[in-house]
Image (cartoon, rainbow, N blue to C red):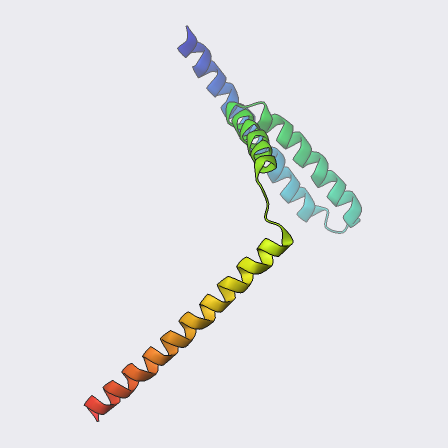
Length: 122
């Protein structure tokens, strides 16, 4: 019985996704057709269409999974310990110094190998 419910849900989900695509397409085409109208009206219409399309998309299984993922990611970001300004500056300074040292080393190696190849060739 659960497979029947799942297949019916997926059929309805497909229909909902078709509605979402139709709403987005209507927004794109409508924005082009009504290009002579005020930008404010077009933006408001696009926001309304985007809101309705988002609401319909959230009613699907994939939409609900995305929303759940978004909420979980937001809670994980709160758990991150961000570096202080001093730690950020120190790390940036270390990276800059190491890049300069490696750059100078590679420049010197390139110059040496170029000299050796020039001596051998000619």
